[in-house]
Image 1 (cartoon, rainbow, N blue to C red):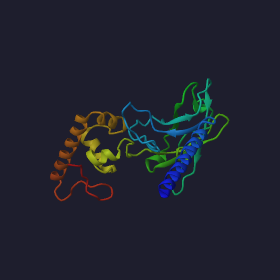
Image 2 (image 1 turned 120 degrees about the vertical axis):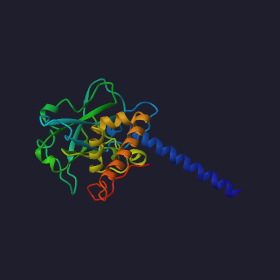
Image 3 (image 1 turned 120 degrees about the horizontal axis):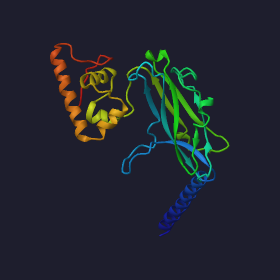
Image 4 (image 1 turned 90 degrees about the horizontal axis):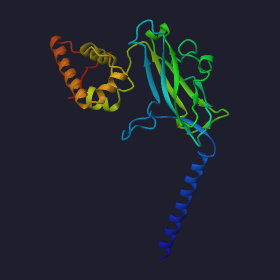
Length: 260
């Protein structure tokens, strides 16, 4: 009986501690306005990871040569009470280790550029906004991929939210690169592991762009994605039969395949 009472006592203590911690965390994130990155807003019933879009890729590969800039968007959210006025927030670049880091004015428009004065703001009575990252088409992007890391910075309007949701990374190039919508599910069930040569083969064979917009269109219709899976699988067999002893391989010398 004493052991039973002891167990009940310990459970009660643990429960109280848990509730207290939960309340502490609740108060921490409701004591004043805070801000953090988050996943895109999706239709009800759709499941996405809260860390989706932590890393994005952007390419000028599909654009005409006269296109010299583009804008990539990330999602941001506020925590705490709504405001009746617009509230600006601040981001700054992070220099990432062991990669080619973006240079403001060369690879992207600096976050404090006068042209973006009103771009980094949460509208009145809103908890969500799109963060615009304006990228520039520098000639060296045809030969390399540039990395732009950036993070939120506390200002007069916002404290910071969860540590793991304060940063994002964007990779910029003018070469063919993996679309953001080529997900693990896409690889496992439909098109296999990504490679640049496979991507090129898909474009050449179907005469479609196979960029993020096209991936979204295909992935939204099960009949369409299954059609392309079958079409590309057959096209690969035809290619390999037409090149005996020289099957299609990727840039690393590995055989290109599509899931059965």
